[in-house]
Length: 216
Image (tube, rainbow, N blue to C red; front, side):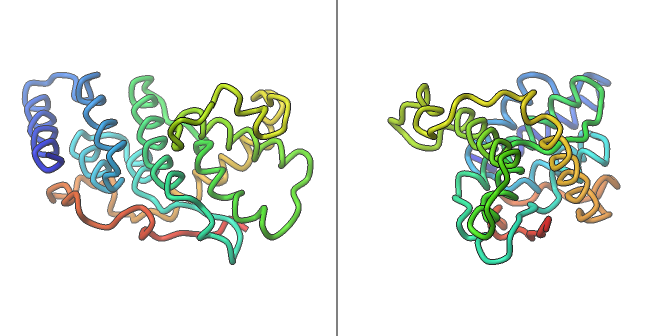
């Protein structure tokens, strides 16, 4: 099913380019998001976006490595966070393509992947605790990885009063900008050069096997 969907998407992109039509239509974006939710490797999407002639910076952001913090506790990052990062990067890129802009911020799930291992090594300040709780809440609400969980009372379960974006905006944007910059710089320079290759097979390397870097 995934392979057939990839073929269909590839053909749709090529046909749209030949006809001079909009390439990343709402229907095509929906198909990409469905495949992302099924756990497909982000490099597959990077190949497809490259075929669609998306800006190289966005392709590198999608294909680049996952940044993690800490030294000894990377394995504590749950599998749903790895998948959430792929989904969130793709969502962000598609939104930016629609708006005709290139953003600077990484997603809350990426900030979560950086901060989670660090919480096992050093105590967080009050400001960074709020950033961590905000990113945890935002990611959990969006992806809802645990079935039959009452997400409506998530702040109550966390044991915190709700934290809004304005409260953490300065610190969040500093770390999110740093993460996205590092992702793009660490991505292969071959991305965005219109490689003459077919999209990767859907059973190639998974997110957890992709290279990781430490922010700290």
